[in-house]
Image (cartoon, rainbow, N blue to C red; front, side, top):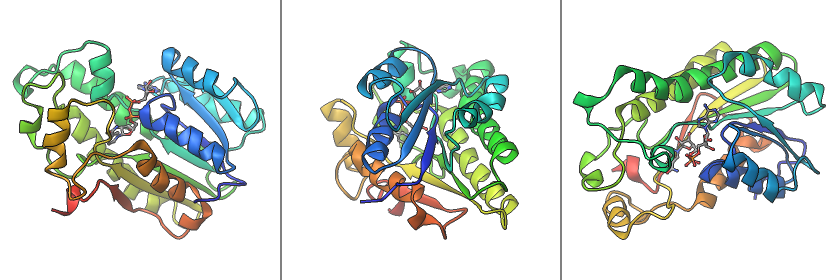
Amino acid sequence: MADLKGRTVFITGSGGVLGSTYVRRMLASGARVVASDLPGERAEGLKDRHGGDAGNFRFYELDVTDEEAVEGIFRRVMGDGWDPNVVINNAAVTGELLVAQGQDFPDLASTRTEDFEKVIRTNLTGAFMVARQMDRDIVGRYPASLINVASMYALRGPHHAIYDDMPFKNLSAYGISKAGIHGLTVWLASYWAGRQATVNTIAPGAVFNGHSDEFQRRVSELVMAGRMARTDEIADVMLFLASEAAGYMTGQLVNVDGGYSAW
Ligand SMILES: NC(=O)c1ccc[n+]([C@@H]2O[C@H](COP(=O)([O-])OP(=O)(O)OC[C@H]3O[C@@H](n4cnc5c(N)ncnc54)[C@H](O)[C@@H]3O)[C@@H](O)[C@H]2O)c1
Protein backbone atom coordinates (compact mmCIF):
# COMPACT_ATOMS: atom_id res chain seq x y z
CA MET A 1 0.00 0.00 0.00
CA ALA A 2 1.30 3.48 -0.92
CA ASP A 3 2.80 5.54 1.88
CA LEU A 4 1.60 9.13 1.64
CA LYS A 5 3.19 10.50 4.81
CA GLY A 6 4.57 13.95 4.03
CA ARG A 7 2.15 14.42 1.11
CA THR A 8 -0.45 17.19 1.18
CA VAL A 9 -2.96 16.38 -1.53
CA PHE A 10 -5.37 18.93 -2.99
CA ILE A 11 -8.35 17.34 -4.82
CA THR A 12 -11.10 18.98 -6.87
CA GLY A 13 -14.57 17.39 -7.07
CA SER A 14 -13.79 15.48 -3.87
CA GLY A 15 -17.35 14.65 -2.87
CA GLY A 16 -18.13 12.36 -5.82
CA VAL A 17 -17.93 8.59 -6.18
CA LEU A 18 -14.19 8.44 -6.85
CA GLY A 19 -13.14 11.70 -5.16
CA SER A 20 -14.56 10.62 -1.81
CA THR A 21 -12.77 7.26 -2.15
CA TYR A 22 -9.46 9.04 -2.80
CA VAL A 23 -10.01 11.23 0.29
CA ARG A 24 -10.72 8.22 2.52
CA ARG A 25 -7.83 6.14 1.21
CA MET A 26 -5.31 8.99 1.26
CA LEU A 27 -6.12 9.87 4.85
CA ALA A 28 -5.68 6.19 5.75
CA SER A 29 -2.26 6.26 4.03
CA GLY A 30 -1.01 9.17 6.12
CA ALA A 31 -1.59 12.09 3.72
CA ARG A 32 -2.92 15.48 4.68
CA VAL A 33 -5.94 15.96 2.41
CA VAL A 34 -7.30 19.27 1.20
CA ALA A 35 -10.66 18.36 -0.31
CA SER A 36 -12.70 20.76 -2.44
CA ASP A 37 -16.00 20.66 -4.30
CA LEU A 38 -19.06 22.71 -5.17
CA PRO A 39 -21.23 23.56 -2.18
CA GLY A 40 -24.09 21.10 -1.66
CA GLU A 41 -24.97 17.63 -0.50
CA ARG A 42 -21.79 15.95 -1.68
CA ALA A 43 -19.61 18.48 0.13
CA GLU A 44 -21.68 18.26 3.30
CA GLY A 45 -21.62 14.46 3.25
CA LEU A 46 -17.86 14.44 2.84
CA LYS A 47 -17.33 16.93 5.67
CA ASP A 48 -19.65 14.93 7.96
CA ARG A 49 -17.80 11.71 7.26
CA HIS A 50 -14.45 13.29 8.17
CA GLY A 51 -15.62 15.28 11.18
CA GLY A 52 -15.38 18.73 9.55
CA ASP A 53 -12.00 20.45 9.44
CA ALA A 54 -10.23 18.05 11.76
CA GLY A 55 -6.99 16.08 11.91
CA ASN A 56 -5.46 15.67 8.47
CA PHE A 57 -8.64 16.75 6.62
CA ARG A 58 -9.61 20.21 5.39
CA PHE A 59 -12.44 21.23 3.05
CA TYR A 60 -12.67 24.32 0.80
CA GLU A 61 -15.59 25.17 -1.48
CA LEU A 62 -14.31 25.51 -5.04
CA ASP A 63 -16.13 25.76 -8.36
CA VAL A 64 -13.41 25.03 -10.92
CA THR A 65 -15.27 27.12 -13.54
CA ASP A 66 -14.98 30.24 -11.35
CA GLU A 67 -11.74 31.85 -12.51
CA GLU A 68 -11.42 34.25 -9.59
CA ALA A 69 -11.99 31.47 -7.06
CA VAL A 70 -9.41 29.22 -8.75
CA GLU A 71 -6.92 32.10 -8.80
CA GLY A 72 -7.22 32.50 -5.04
CA ILE A 73 -7.42 28.86 -3.96
CA PHE A 74 -3.76 27.97 -3.39
CA ARG A 75 -3.05 31.25 -1.58
CA ARG A 76 -6.00 30.50 0.74
CA VAL A 77 -4.91 26.92 1.35
CA MET A 78 -1.24 27.86 1.79
CA GLY A 79 -2.19 30.75 4.05
CA ASP A 80 -3.75 28.13 6.31
CA GLY A 81 -0.46 26.16 6.30
CA TRP A 82 -1.55 23.38 3.94
CA ASP A 83 0.94 23.80 1.05
CA PRO A 84 -0.06 21.08 -1.46
CA ASN A 85 2.64 18.96 -3.08
CA VAL A 86 0.08 16.88 -5.01
CA VAL A 87 -2.83 18.40 -6.96
CA ILE A 88 -5.57 16.24 -8.51
CA ASN A 89 -7.79 17.60 -11.29
CA ASN A 90 -10.70 15.24 -10.58
CA ALA A 91 -13.80 17.49 -10.88
CA ALA A 92 -15.96 16.82 -13.91
CA VAL A 93 -19.44 16.94 -15.30
CA THR A 94 -20.16 13.22 -15.60
CA GLY A 95 -23.11 11.16 -16.81
CA GLU A 96 -23.83 10.37 -13.13
CA LEU A 97 -24.17 14.06 -12.29
CA LEU A 98 -26.47 14.73 -15.22
CA VAL A 99 -28.71 11.77 -14.35
CA ALA A 100 -28.92 13.04 -10.77
CA GLN A 101 -29.94 16.47 -12.13
CA GLY A 102 -32.62 14.84 -14.31
CA GLN A 103 -30.98 16.20 -17.48
CA ASP A 104 -31.55 14.97 -21.01
CA PHE A 105 -28.92 13.19 -23.05
CA PRO A 106 -29.38 14.62 -26.55
CA ASP A 107 -27.97 12.89 -29.60
CA LEU A 108 -25.27 14.75 -31.50
CA ALA A 109 -27.69 16.45 -33.90
CA SER A 110 -29.64 17.97 -30.98
CA THR A 111 -26.63 18.92 -28.83
CA ARG A 112 -26.64 22.65 -28.14
CA THR A 113 -23.30 24.42 -28.39
CA GLU A 114 -23.81 26.05 -24.98
CA ASP A 115 -24.29 22.63 -23.32
CA PHE A 116 -21.17 21.30 -25.05
CA GLU A 117 -19.22 24.34 -23.85
CA LYS A 118 -20.49 23.94 -20.26
CA VAL A 119 -18.96 20.46 -20.05
CA ILE A 120 -15.70 21.66 -21.63
CA ARG A 121 -15.60 24.60 -19.20
CA THR A 122 -15.67 22.27 -16.17
CA ASN A 123 -13.76 19.24 -17.41
CA LEU A 124 -11.05 20.95 -19.43
CA THR A 125 -10.91 24.72 -18.89
CA GLY A 126 -11.35 24.19 -15.13
CA ALA A 127 -8.46 21.72 -15.09
CA PHE A 128 -6.37 24.16 -17.14
CA MET A 129 -7.07 27.00 -14.69
CA VAL A 130 -6.12 24.84 -11.69
CA ALA A 131 -2.89 23.79 -13.45
CA ARG A 132 -2.10 27.39 -14.40
CA GLN A 133 -2.59 28.45 -10.77
CA MET A 134 -0.33 25.62 -9.65
CA ASP A 135 2.28 27.03 -12.06
CA ARG A 136 1.88 30.50 -10.56
CA ASP A 137 1.88 29.54 -6.88
CA ILE A 138 3.70 26.22 -6.48
CA VAL A 139 5.85 25.06 -9.41
CA GLY A 140 9.51 26.01 -8.99
CA ARG A 141 9.09 26.77 -5.28
CA TYR A 142 9.10 23.13 -4.11
CA PRO A 143 8.70 19.67 -5.74
CA ALA A 144 5.10 18.95 -6.74
CA SER A 145 3.01 16.72 -8.93
CA LEU A 146 -0.26 17.11 -10.79
CA ILE A 147 -2.57 14.23 -11.63
CA ASN A 148 -5.19 14.83 -14.32
CA VAL A 149 -8.19 12.50 -14.46
CA ALA A 150 -9.19 11.31 -17.93
CA SER A 151 -11.28 8.25 -18.78
CA MET A 152 -11.35 5.07 -20.84
CA TYR A 153 -13.12 7.33 -23.35
CA ALA A 154 -10.23 9.82 -23.65
CA LEU A 155 -8.42 8.21 -26.54
CA ARG A 156 -11.04 5.71 -27.76
CA GLY A 157 -14.52 6.12 -29.09
CA PRO A 158 -17.33 4.69 -26.97
CA HIS A 159 -19.46 1.70 -27.99
CA HIS A 160 -22.63 3.75 -28.31
CA ALA A 161 -24.84 0.64 -28.44
CA ILE A 162 -24.23 -0.15 -24.75
CA TYR A 163 -26.26 2.99 -23.91
CA ASP A 164 -29.35 1.92 -25.91
CA ASP A 165 -32.45 2.16 -23.66
CA MET A 166 -30.32 3.35 -20.70
CA PRO A 167 -31.21 6.49 -18.68
CA PHE A 168 -27.90 8.05 -19.73
CA LYS A 169 -25.87 8.24 -22.94
CA ASN A 170 -22.25 8.93 -23.78
CA LEU A 171 -21.96 12.68 -24.37
CA SER A 172 -19.67 13.98 -27.11
CA ALA A 173 -18.26 16.70 -24.85
CA TYR A 174 -17.23 14.16 -22.21
CA GLY A 175 -14.80 12.10 -24.29
CA ILE A 176 -13.57 15.20 -26.11
CA SER A 177 -12.80 16.93 -22.79
CA LYS A 178 -11.00 13.82 -21.54
CA ALA A 179 -8.80 13.65 -24.66
CA GLY A 180 -7.97 17.31 -24.01
CA ILE A 181 -7.02 16.48 -20.42
CA HIS A 182 -4.24 14.22 -21.63
CA GLY A 183 -3.18 16.94 -24.06
CA LEU A 184 -2.85 19.19 -21.00
CA THR A 185 -0.70 16.53 -19.31
CA VAL A 186 1.84 16.13 -22.09
CA TRP A 187 2.01 19.88 -22.75
CA LEU A 188 2.68 20.62 -19.08
CA ALA A 189 5.12 17.73 -18.62
CA SER A 190 7.52 19.31 -21.09
CA TYR A 191 6.77 22.88 -19.94
CA TRP A 192 7.62 21.92 -16.34
CA ALA A 193 10.66 19.81 -17.27
CA GLY A 194 13.58 20.70 -15.00
CA ARG A 195 11.32 22.51 -12.53
CA GLN A 196 10.73 19.62 -10.11
CA ALA A 197 7.12 19.24 -11.21
CA THR A 198 5.65 16.09 -12.74
CA VAL A 199 2.25 15.60 -14.34
CA ASN A 200 0.47 12.39 -15.28
CA THR A 201 -2.98 11.26 -16.39
CA ILE A 202 -5.00 8.44 -14.86
CA ALA A 203 -7.68 6.99 -17.14
CA PRO A 204 -10.21 5.01 -15.10
CA GLY A 205 -12.47 2.43 -16.71
CA ALA A 206 -16.16 2.01 -15.93
CA VAL A 207 -16.67 2.08 -12.16
CA PHE A 208 -19.64 0.21 -10.70
CA ASN A 209 -22.05 2.53 -8.91
CA GLY A 210 -25.43 0.84 -8.78
CA HIS A 211 -25.76 0.35 -12.56
CA SER A 212 -28.45 -2.02 -13.85
CA ASP A 213 -27.58 -5.69 -14.44
CA GLU A 214 -28.04 -5.17 -18.17
CA PHE A 215 -25.63 -2.23 -18.29
CA GLN A 216 -23.08 -4.17 -16.22
CA ARG A 217 -23.40 -7.11 -18.61
CA ARG A 218 -22.86 -4.94 -21.70
CA VAL A 219 -19.81 -3.18 -20.24
CA SER A 220 -18.32 -6.37 -18.84
CA GLU A 221 -18.26 -7.95 -22.31
CA LEU A 222 -15.95 -5.15 -23.46
CA VAL A 223 -13.53 -5.53 -20.57
CA MET A 224 -10.87 -8.25 -20.25
CA ALA A 225 -11.48 -8.39 -16.48
CA GLY A 226 -15.11 -9.30 -17.30
CA ARG A 227 -16.58 -6.84 -14.80
CA MET A 228 -16.82 -3.17 -13.87
CA ALA A 229 -14.21 -1.60 -11.54
CA ARG A 230 -14.50 -1.10 -7.80
CA THR A 231 -13.74 2.44 -6.61
CA ASP A 232 -10.88 1.14 -4.46
CA GLU A 233 -9.21 -0.41 -7.52
CA ILE A 234 -8.96 3.04 -9.12
CA ALA A 235 -7.84 4.54 -5.80
CA ASP A 236 -4.99 1.98 -5.52
CA VAL A 237 -3.40 3.44 -8.66
CA MET A 238 -4.26 7.03 -7.77
CA LEU A 239 -2.46 6.57 -4.44
CA PHE A 240 0.62 5.25 -6.21
CA LEU A 241 0.64 8.27 -8.59
CA ALA A 242 0.32 10.60 -5.59
CA SER A 243 3.21 8.94 -3.76
CA GLU A 244 6.94 9.56 -4.00
CA ALA A 245 7.23 6.15 -5.66
CA ALA A 246 5.92 7.75 -8.90
CA GLY A 247 8.62 10.43 -8.83
CA TYR A 248 10.29 9.30 -12.08
CA MET A 249 7.05 9.35 -14.07
CA THR A 250 5.89 12.36 -16.03
CA GLY A 251 3.76 12.91 -19.13
CA GLN A 252 2.24 9.42 -18.87
CA LEU A 253 -1.30 8.12 -19.24
CA VAL A 254 -2.08 5.22 -16.93
CA ASN A 255 -5.11 3.13 -17.89
CA VAL A 256 -6.95 1.43 -15.02
CA ASP A 257 -9.67 -0.10 -17.13
CA GLY A 258 -9.62 -3.89 -16.71
CA GLY A 259 -8.09 -4.18 -20.19
CA TYR A 260 -10.74 -2.17 -22.08
CA SER A 261 -8.09 -0.21 -24.00
CA ALA A 262 -5.88 -3.22 -24.76
CA TRP A 263 -8.37 -5.04 -26.98
N1 LIG B 1 -16.94 6.81 -12.31
C1 LIG B 1 -16.44 6.39 -13.47
O1 LIG B 1 -16.83 5.34 -14.01
C2 LIG B 1 -15.36 7.17 -14.15
C3 LIG B 1 -14.70 6.58 -15.23
C4 LIG B 1 -13.71 7.29 -15.88
C5 LIG B 1 -13.36 8.56 -15.43
N2 LIG B 1 -14.01 9.11 -14.36
C6 LIG B 1 -13.57 10.45 -13.95
O2 LIG B 1 -13.24 10.44 -12.57
C7 LIG B 1 -13.55 11.71 -12.00
C8 LIG B 1 -14.48 11.53 -10.82
O3 LIG B 1 -15.66 10.90 -11.30
P1 LIG B 1 -16.79 10.35 -10.34
O4 LIG B 1 -17.23 9.05 -10.88
O5 LIG B 1 -16.37 10.43 -8.92
O6 LIG B 1 -17.92 11.41 -10.69
P2 LIG B 1 -19.00 12.13 -9.76
O7 LIG B 1 -20.01 12.69 -10.70
O8 LIG B 1 -19.44 11.22 -8.68
O9 LIG B 1 -18.14 13.31 -9.12
C9 LIG B 1 -17.74 14.45 -9.82
C10 LIG B 1 -17.52 15.55 -8.79
O10 LIG B 1 -17.13 16.74 -9.50
C11 LIG B 1 -17.80 17.81 -8.89
N3 LIG B 1 -17.94 18.94 -9.81
C12 LIG B 1 -18.75 19.06 -10.90
N4 LIG B 1 -18.64 20.28 -11.42
C13 LIG B 1 -17.75 20.96 -10.65
C14 LIG B 1 -17.24 22.27 -10.66
N5 LIG B 1 -17.64 23.17 -11.57
N6 LIG B 1 -16.35 22.63 -9.70
C15 LIG B 1 -15.95 21.73 -8.76
N7 LIG B 1 -16.41 20.48 -8.68
C16 LIG B 1 -17.31 20.10 -9.62
C17 LIG B 1 -19.17 17.26 -8.46
O11 LIG B 1 -19.76 18.07 -7.46
C18 LIG B 1 -18.79 15.87 -7.98
O12 LIG B 1 -18.50 15.82 -6.60
C19 LIG B 1 -14.14 12.55 -13.12
O13 LIG B 1 -13.12 13.33 -13.72
C20 LIG B 1 -14.65 11.51 -14.09
O14 LIG B 1 -14.74 12.01 -15.40
C21 LIG B 1 -14.99 8.45 -13.71
